[in-house]
Figure (cartoon, helix red, strand yellow):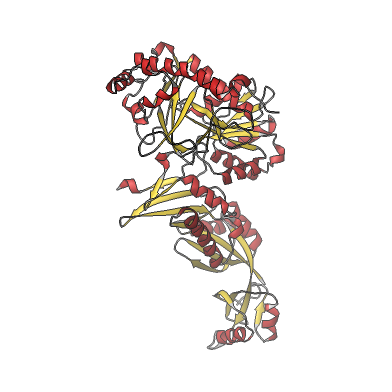
Length: 143
Length: 435
């Protein structure tokens, strides 16, 4: 599993800037980011290389921060690759809470999809058993 | 063992107390009639003279005094003694109009200090106690009012005033402070900064505190007691009558004892102004019977409460007023429903996860009142999942609706984004008055 940083953001000017500014200052490189938004607040979800340190930096700045596990799946940049994963999930009766994707910088695959499932127990093993590439980190050999 | 400062006065029989009050009332009415043109004209208008006050029951024949009367007679028009005899001035903040000014003679200051000393004794304070006064010092009555009471009692006063919270905490620890006086919202602020500094309640020697100058809920009381490790007592007062220590909770905390040798309380119907039946709620009206500088006859405090004359388990005979939910000036009317901010606070804290940092924003949208309650998001409910957070908002909102009958939108805000109070907390932003 990957550690994702979750940040509570009030819907007002400058709050996201505060997060990006904190990372710029602290030399934190973002791998992926997504925002779930409601009328009044957003939940920012971020993947970085050193999540524990980055979360501590944000807490220091007064942000409400939590760390939680997500699953990273690698797929090819070709028609039907995401469909294969989603189909497998349905067959295994695994519900998706939310998901977002990023372009990979790896040599051997093109796209990484971050999943958060309702029930994440043994999910990585189940996916791997069905021939899906699950990543334990986003580093590795770059293109 | 119950600690009294003046056992004879504090526990005297009701009949004796009334015997003590009557000549004091008669004397007060005569003094204002002779020395305050405002009162003389008012009494002449309704055809009453000081000689007509023959019993305590005649009190209800006297005219009511309201805050506007103090404003109309700004600054010193209601003083009943020459300025030579006034030794101190206090003034209200004037946020809702022109400030109101009050004056005290040497005897007034002594009487006030004595009332405050009685309150501290009720909390178990004695000459060995160390009392930190964290009310603001200055024109506000809180700081100096509490201060003189501590000195009168012979305890040690630490005149910290409000603000500089880290230093307050250092003193609480280093000086072994046993009692604290401040607003409830400032007590919460202190508790929070303590946590940031890594100071635990076990590092403190606090036993009790008197918290007042703003309405607060029982949920807030539990929070303060739990976080500071003390017994929290409510203290009541208003500058027009004197300042803090008009009334105070004894350890049974079943209402606040009003020092009736100095203040005669009544409850009147908010609509008719007539006395209510004993035990019914209404406007608290107070007549000062020993004050010299600015004696007030039947002053309408704008606090809604009930009175009980039953003897208290603590042995004191002085009437108890119920903890007021708030001043009528602070009452919000939201689409016809009357609600006090302290009632909203009580509901918020009953939800459990919520900390007592909140703000109420009232607005008018398309001729309809709207209320938004801002709460700092509790750590315990925050996850990466929107659904969980929204269901928490829904829970708080439906609780407000079922208990108070109001429709409020809950808006979660970031931690520490609601301003922390060092004195009276600003709980309500009412945008309706701006038109």
